[in-house]
Length: 497
Image 1 (cartoon, helix red, strand yellow):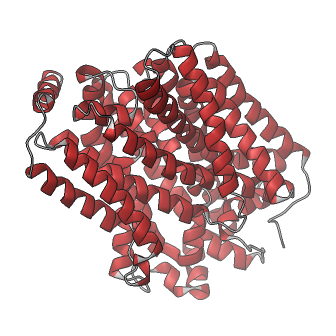
Image 2 (cartoon, rainbow, N blue to C red):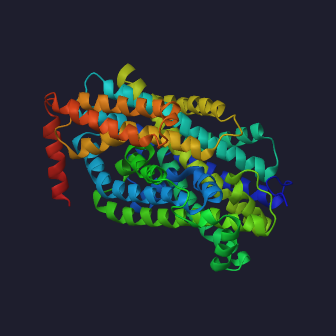
Image 3 (tube, rainbow, N blue to C red):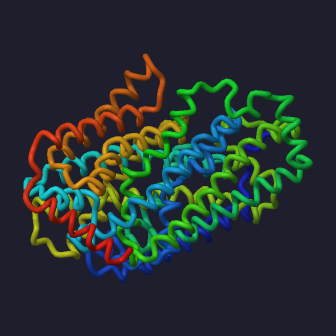
């Protein structure tokens, strides 16, 4: 039975169209409410804990949650679940220790509305060097990251509607770009809320129905043991290096700009603990659902003789096979939701980098907010076009593309963010050196280093960046004002524990 391509279904088409129209409506609704750049890029720092938490989760996970991760579990079994464990730990540490300090610094010490903004004010960088380097890193790795979403969207439309990959790629790109183009940050956050709930619901329903058809968890495990005994083990066939590489995904959280801006936009630091509980609960439930679905797919595909040429389409196949077309349409919209939530957030951060960090702060400081927003919308189109061309390879793996971009941000920004928020002695040159070393290490190790020692490139990148920051910072004096600003942040945090 081959369900990877199907004939056009009226219920599924209708469901997709309705869902896309709702998302576009939200974009147009907030289009008229964006009066300032802080509105467009940061929602005027008025986002509540529920919206902030689910928006951070949904923008974080992307299409890999419903495609890449289940596909990895389907191919290799439980050993791949270490990725989910590492991500859960990293996300919790990020919310628990980074969120409050970043929110206070970017609002009380200086009104920073982008991550490059924060770097510049934190280190009193009047030469704009940190702003330029961080903006360059954001544009490079986000363009790669966005392309993973476009690949996932193209695979979704190709498998669901039986249309050619390139046409599917165009459709997905137009939908994602349209509501990011108009709505800005508030539109992205509110659509993320809807998308996050839809994603979690789909990841609960599909594995439960699969279990029912397989005759329960015990029966499924027995069948998987007969098909692929190694799939049942967390350690068999997996090296220590492989486990460490999977767990190291958690390091990436500290450097993801589209997640960090959620901390900057939350309404109050007092709401961060509630947002942490909501966000981590959503994340753990969703990751367990994704892993379970991929794991059960090993048994389901064999037992019911279903053809699956691309493991990353396991969720698509299960949705079409187990449910009537109307329900399948809703479930498949969850993939579109995952892709849209992440790609739109990344497009917005990329456009803010071009409009705010390049154009307004360096070339035209007197530009009006309205004109800056226009520049930002043009930037959305430019970044999307580049990502589109990267996405034209239909054989690309969503998980592999995400892993590369995730490592790039984790290594180049992660150690800089952590040390800048917890070490008053850190200097501007230390931040610059760490950022450059982290980014270059990821690129070189990804392309050359893995030939000699296979480990996830975020590990050498993060470690080398941290070491360089420490050494360089200790070799020079702190710039005037930076230590005082750091101490002011600590006093503000102690005032509102």
